[in-house]
Every structure is written in structure tokens, then in C-alpha cells.
Amino acid sequence: MVSNLRSVSSLVGACALSLMLLGGCVATPPAQTLVDERRSESAVDASAPTLETVRVVDPVDNAFSVEVPVGWDSVAYNAHEGDIDQQVVTSVSPDGRTVLYVGDPKMPAYWDPDSADGLTRQLADWLDLMELRYYEAAEFYVPQYTQAKFGALPDFDLFAVNDVPELLVSLQQTYENAGLTPPEAHASEARFTYITDDGTLMNGIVTGVTINFGVGWQVFVQGLATDRTVEEYLPMLSAMSSSRIDNPEYQERLRQEEAAQMARIQAEIEAMTARAQASLAWIQQSAQRHQQRMNAIWAQGDASMQNYYSRMDSMDRTQQGFLNYINEENTVAPLGTPSGAGSAGAPTWQVDSGYDRYWVDPSTGNYLGGDINFGDSQIRELGFNPSDYEEVTVIR
Image 1: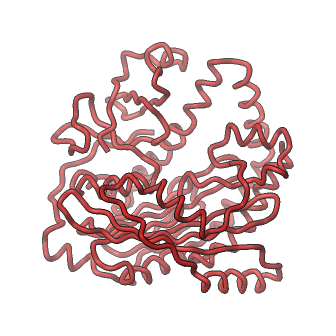
Image 2: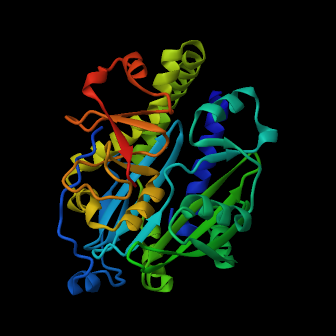
């Protein structure tokens, strides 16, 4: 198992070089009521394309930093599982009508099934960020991914898929500059439209690169959606992506912790197969990682990151849905809150999207998630008091 995970880690490390082709190598506070700036001329003007940026640091692991547009509300974080990292950056314009994003928090590292042994298959069963799957070129992968990621948006129409050969040239040059043989790779873009609740036509694009290393493969994605033209904001997206800088101290810390991480994963897998309670606890890990991320973002004190979540209810439902799809989150509220509604004075929380039912401790904002049968008895098994938790409903 250790050797398998190290192999995955080495794949991800090699893929870090490839990022240059895309641009370079516990409680969620209740949403606050803010003035809706979307219609103001000043907000519209401030949302025009700009290359003026400010650097922010990933508050979760201090794994990387990135330049984001000045005056936009931005979040940057590292989604980490085992030895696999996914760096995610999302930035929202002042008028709420343009969203830029880089990365996907739940994009797995893919392992070729013919190269997988028994332990690898077991890991793929339990780790969210590892999956057994044969290589798919970007021209096939990207449209499937885009449809699955954003297809539930109102009047979603994926109308074009195009190759992006210039990205492959950049990738090849990156590997050659590093003295490496370029791997098999493909790059494509998917273009789509959808319509907001107020009838605004939104234009979107997802660009993806698939890179085949033989025993495994990796995918890098980025994209944007806007009520203007996609072309206006592509330079901003490229600049944001290319500005990412890895923190070498974090990489060294990962290497030092590798043995302990492998031992923890092995112990959790063995416990999961031995005890139902351990199995239930394992299921909660995605929620725990998400809550840690939210706590770190809020504790960092960065105004841009905090405002990103504070202004959720000032955005229309569809734009919030788009952001939730990017970050793999749901917005939940007390039972009885209509689907798609704003909080209307009631609290809302951001939760990981991987569950059927959610329970929140209103005093802390901490939440638990599970399948359709998740309830009081499961909460007790996890060591919590069910009376401290209230069931909530997904509204977005």
C-alpha cells in the first residue's frame, strides 16, 4: 500500500510541472445580510476585466499562494487526502455575475485498472481522491466532466467542444525544459450557456488537460462563467492560474509525514472493515475536512475570503449554485426553508455535497452528514449528543 500511495504521490508531483500549461507550476459562520450590489453601476464597472491583483495564501495548509483580482471576492484552498492535493481558487466579481475558478476539490488521481493490485483497489474504494479508470483523452473527458459538474444549471446547453493545441505545445516545452520526456497528453475546452433566474444568459467555458503517465493519469481543469463574453476574462483566468506558487516548506512537511500518513490510512481501512462504528466515522471524514477548510478560511481574517461567504445571499440562486458546483458544496438551512430561497433572516451553512442528510449544531455550525438513514442512533454512535443537532435541508 505504501508503495502504491508513493506512486500516486510521484504522479501528482510530476503533474505539478504540467500546471504551467494551465497557468503555472469546523463551523461555517451564518451568512450575513448584505446590500445587493449587482445592479449598481459602480459594481458593474468594478467587475470589468482587470489584471490588477493581490496575492493570497491558502489558509488550510499554507500549501500555495496565488494572485487574485483586486476588489473581487476570492477563496483559495488546498483539498488534501493521503498524498493527493487539489489546489482550488475561486474568484467572484463585485456584481456577482462573473466567476473564475481553477481546480476541482474532488478531482481524483486516476489509476489504470490493469496496473492496480489488491491494495490499490482497496484504497480506490475508500479514498475520494483516488479512482480506478482507464485513460480518457480530454476531448472525451472534458465534455463529460462539464456536463456532470454544471449540467443541472437552468437551461444548460453544452454547445461546443474544441481542441486546444497551444496548451499541448506549452506542456511539451515545460517537460523538455525540465529534462523530461513529455507524456501522452490532450487538451480540450467545453463551451456552454445557462440562464439565471432573472433571465440573464451566462456564457461559460471549462478547459481541461488529461495527462497519461501509464500506470495512472491526472486531469487539470479551470473555467469561468460570465454575463459578458468568455474571451474578455480568459486573460484574467490564465494570469490567476499561472500565478500559483507552491510552498516548498509544505512539500517538505508532506515528505516527512508520509510514513505516518500511510500508517493512519492503513489503520483506518482495517478499522473500517472490522467495526461499523469505525465505518461510520470514516464516512464523516469528508465533512471533517470540509469544516476544517471553512474554519481555516474564516480564521485567516482575509477580508476577500470572508466576504466571499458573507455575501452568499446577496447573489442570485443560480450563481450560488454555480459556486456550489465548483466547490462541491451544498447550502443548507433549517427544515422548512424553501429550496432555492435566501436565508430571509434564517441561518445558512455551507456543507460538503457528498451526503443525503445533514445535521447541524446551531451553536457552533458544526455538521454531520450521512446517507438517507442517518439519524439519532448514528449520531450517538459517533459520540455526539443528538439533542445538540438539528436536521437541515439543502436549499441550493
